[in-house]
Length: 110
Image (tube, rainbow, N blue to C red; front, side, top):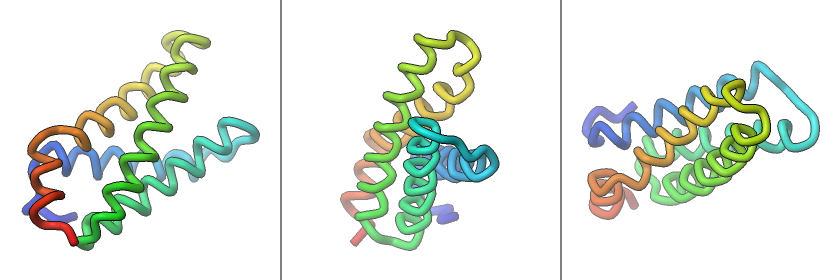
């Protein structure tokens, strides 16, 4: 973890790590398995971003958008059962698109 990053970006990195960890614990088939692969790709992107590469931010952003859209569809289909996943995906996406995060990525990442 890079502690010089702003708090919204640190939140997004932690949410990405948590999504990747829980997707490793619950392997699935079909769309759930695809969402797990997206979450793992987002966690890898977060790790690359912490190591100073801008493409990690892009990978994390794409994975966050996909995860949020699928979580939103799951929330409408299953109700509050999918609410926690929607909460983590929303926090991940909000942390990534926050103005402080975008400014940090623009200035400090290669």
